[in-house]
Length: 464
Image (cartoon, rainbow, N blue to C red):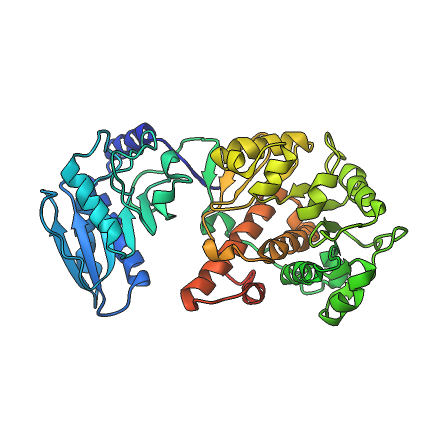
């Protein structure tokens, strides 16, 4: 099983003890964590930038101090914080490193520590927290009076369960290779890393042709929402199936066709049949216009229930799906955001967000054990049973209209290809990770990227 296990604090402590018993040296692990921390800070800063390193008395502080020799061409300013009443000068710092408290914090912080943490948050400077934001109790997820608001949290070894979905954590990253023995825990939550996808995409044979790589059909686009069909097709084309066909509503056929080149475009009609070569179908993107034909609803329900093809349902098609079992062995995927998930569960987005894994399990059970991509911060991928994978890539700038259409098309374009159908879960995880990683690459290079830019970048990030 790929993915890094998401573990508890007691499991982390037992893992460390087993590592020391096996011969790993605590000092060497600290040195490696320091190098990982420095490497990330070098990516986040520029030569000459001031990095303010706040180091506590424990091993969390040791990790911070171990980074200093590796911060080349940076102004690394270390403050050993033993007394929280000490005045801290944040002036001119490009980043603050929070190494005050680690995962061992299990008591409320006194007024002086809370005041220091509030001053860090009020400084308006991005913070990288080491292992956990100081003030967050990682055993139970509670804030002990006050907690650092991190932009990035670099946790050691493996993600801790209480860090998942916590607003104080910001972007959660893992320093996985720090010299501990391999982690052997089998947990229901798994953290996705690029190394999970080594060997992907699969190699193509020189003698192959477009018939070798499947045909993605996209039933999408209605009046006022034709762009969703175009973007879905762009996502599918980035996956490089042999053929892509779009079936928009007749009133937007001309608009979709005018923006399509490699994709074939046919106006959807009630009597239409998908091409015989079709191997995967996406339905739902941009089908939000009023007074759509009832036959469209019926087609979505029939495809979902009975088709041998891989079917991906998104957006407006989700309420049209028949509850219960689907064709045995056929791939089924839904890609709801929290609001859509809430409506399917007769609930609300807020309730979905309160327990995202439970919502994912419930959605999958409702729809025959299908694969669920529950979108949002740390997108989840999984089924009613088995592991739930937490995506590690992506950023808030994915919250743009059309981003989900690209993802739905990309998933469909991959699943159209026979080589990608052997492990649908891995394929969907890869698509979700690539989608987020493309957004991360764009965010690192320009402040105002658009979904069209994301389309051009999709699938280009190399894996481990």
